[in-house]
Length: 499
Ligand code: ADP
Ligand code: MG
Image (tube, rainbow, N blue to C red):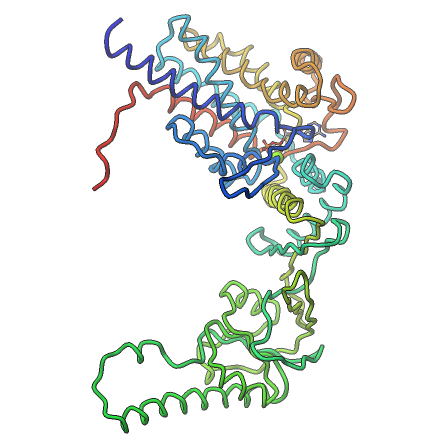
């Protein structure tokens, strides 16, 4: 064997081994019966999760091959919110199958070409024949994403909440989620309005129905002035300070004038304590250091603009507000009297770790609902679409001819790892399950997947297990991409450290 070939074998073997080790850590979490992982860091902080992307993000990986796997799970999460474990497990199987092809003497380039060809054929078939256009399936989509995530007992209620939240906001980026420790998941609800996790600077006697103003600046002496080096004698210094104070006071007077009664002003930056005291004396409560995103949400919900300076303030909005204390933190629940799309999902859960896991489940579910909301493109879940694509590839591999054909067949075999793993994690035989799904496909039914409760197979579509077509497409693209990238690496060399 030539030196270069030895290096290649070595680099490939190491990368594949590292990547497969990553797959092993997440494989047992795939599907509704997947197990959870408990992750502990050096400081003893614990995360319990079933979410592939979270596990991989928290893993302390050093090997480049392993890092590439972690990367694709992030890509999948960014693009499709869900399907991260699926992507990684599929990539792992594509790598394993390529090892068999190496043994048969196929060059990595031939394998990569075959895999690319196969992924294109599979996706074309997915979009043309497996894809279904369906209305009114958002609940099922949300439910499929959330099954297996910390909310077992209330999947129906949780999926309804997710759908309502996305529909109310119109866009996933507008859905705000807040977790309030304590209570049970059933007490979660959608609040029409904005929640601000801040309290008044000074005790404030809050009325339930009051007014609000939004200010995109601060009300304190400007920091720069204190840092500028100017030579001032004592009297001009006190004049200088006095001018600053008067300026602040006149700004505060503007606020009082515009509020024209009692009300709350939300300020983006700091507010000097004296100013707060002055405002309170005049009936105005101050919330300072309000995050820009919160100000925007308030502006949306209340139908008023955010003023750049107190002089520019508009008329205040009338609001309804309640101040609540959860876990020693005060929250203001604020709603306006206009029709708005601003809503906040309030999650309740008994412990912080179940709440965190619930939040991850919600993220997935909100994401997949938003993917399907406009496109209506779905497929049956449980890995059924993967078996259908595999069957199609096997029957069409011969049209490609040459050695790449072997890679296409290997790709088809790898696709079936998804339903096989879902069945295996539920305690059933993976091979029997895949064979039974193949049998149904032979009879023209593309919707069968693993029955995770009783074993065997059942109609996923009839049982409402549906997922976005886009998610499957992206999982295949990402898995193929990472596999071929790893296969193309023929040597690992040390880089000169960055100076
Ligand atoms: P991922 O990180 O890839 O989303 P999950 O652990 O969330 O991994 O599992 C997703 C897989 O579980 C999908 O293939 C989905 O179709 C499948 N699935 C979800 N609910 C069911 C169910 N009730 N029966 C069978 N498969 C299911
Ligand atoms: Mg999922």
